[in-house]
Length: 228
Image 1 (cartoon, rainbow, N blue to C red):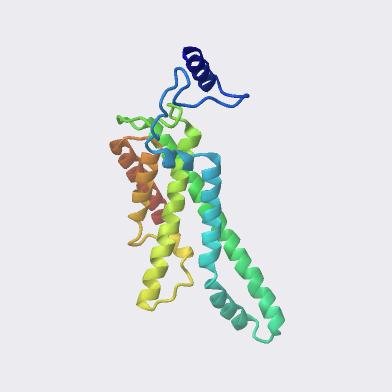
Image 2: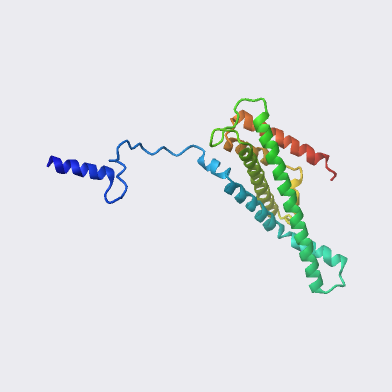
């Protein structure tokens, strides 16, 4: 009986016919580590998460630009009212696509700038709580991705809130996308999004708040200096 018991224990530990051993019986088996805190935020800072964020920005810009078609169509009719309906449709399509491309490039460029400025500020502001991301280092690329995704979150939030508020009040919502770069009551959404991005990047609350405030101030100042 003892020999059989010993053989059975050895078989369970080493596996049968090449099969893996049972976790409970394997010698030296350690319990599985608990899920890491903030794992969802770290997954967003990967290349795939960044690509998904950029794709969401492009899709949202195109979707919220659809109501602009009617306004562009009316402008084309005013300028070339003698043209055929087909020519007016082609002109409207070209103008709408051009407007969409310009909006996507503008929002994308602003996202790049916000991401770079946020990463630089997060690493070099003289405050405690330097970001430590995933592998324990304040990697610039992942910081830049974090604040770029913060910008994407701001754009999506403002587009949604502005459109919903406009529909609720009975206002025209065709110019939702161009209003993203306007200084208005929705600006506080930007520091909130950047604060969450800084926290996802591993920065302490004081540093994340300081970065969000600094980038928002720079963004608002730049918009204020641009000609209206």
